[in-house]
Length: 292
Image 1 (cartoon, rainbow, N blue to C red):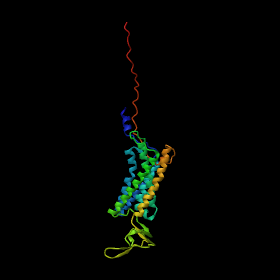
Image 2: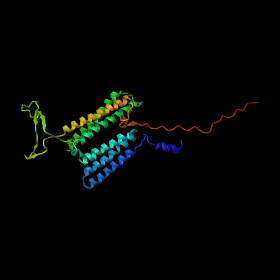
Image 3: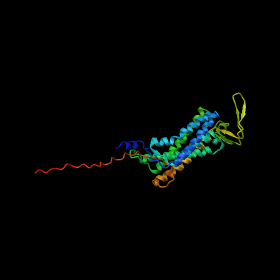
C-alpha cells in the first residue's frame, strides 16, 4: 500500500462521525460559560467553586474520551443531554444554588440520571448481545431488566457517595428536609416498638453541650438526609423504568422507532484496510517453442 494511504488510514477515527455541529456548539457555549464562571470565582477568592469549575471542564471531556477509547458513537441527543446534565448539576445546582432556590431541581436531575443510566446500561448489553466473540444472548425482557438494574445500581452508589461526603467531610450533599410531622418509636414511653406520631411541629431547638439553646426557626422538624435519599432513589427508579420500557420495545421491534436510537450508543468497529489494488501489468507466460 502506498505510504500516503497508510498514513491516512492510521489517522482515521474508528468511530463513525455524524453531523456534530449541534454538539460542538453546545459544548463551546457551556465550556465558555464555565471558564467565565471560573475566572469570576477566582477573583472572588471562592476556591471551592473554582475546583468545581475545573471538575466540570474535566467531565465535559469524558463523552468524547469514551467514544475514542471504547470505539462507540454517542447519538447527538444523548451527548447534548449529558453535557447539559453536567452543567445543570455542577454549575447551576452547586455554584448558583439552584438546589436550594428551586426545590424540584434535584428531583429533575435524579430522574434524568435514572433515564440516562438505563440508556447506557441498555447500550452495553445490546453491544454484548451483538458481539460474536461474547456468548451472551439475552431476550428483550432480560435486556430491559439488566438496564434497569444497572441504572438503580448507579443511583445507589451515588447515594453512598453523598452519605460518605456528609459523614466524613461534613458536607450537605444529602439536602435536609423540613417536616411538620414525624413518627418514631424513640418516644414510646414503654420503650417498646409502638410508633408515636407527633404532628404540628413548628420549630426545633438545639441544646448544645454548654447548655445554650439555638432555635432553628425553620418552621418544622429538620430531617437530615433520609427523605432526600429515598426521594432521589424513587425518581431514579421512575427514570430507569421509563427507558427500560422504551428499550424493550426497541429491541422487540429490532431498531424500529427513532426515539430510542437517540439515546442508545452504537458500537463502531475498526475499519479494515482496503485490499491491495491488482497489478496493472499482466504477467504473460513465456511462449513455448515447438521443436522442429
